[in-house]
Image (tube, rainbow, N blue to C red; front, side, top):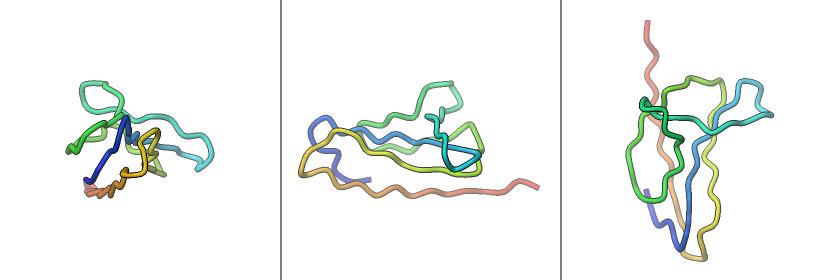
Length: 72
């Protein structure tokens, strides 16, 4: 949630080793490159997750909230 600013993109990335990150996808196989406020489901379950903001401008101000559920 927040302000993306001019051309701002929020990418959700994951890694299993904490060094090499890749863009994660939603259940339809689309990469999670968000350009507006949204709710998205992540298909993969990597050990590490990170949001990465690119472009934007001085008004870009984003907060990422992650809700995770462990299945039995």
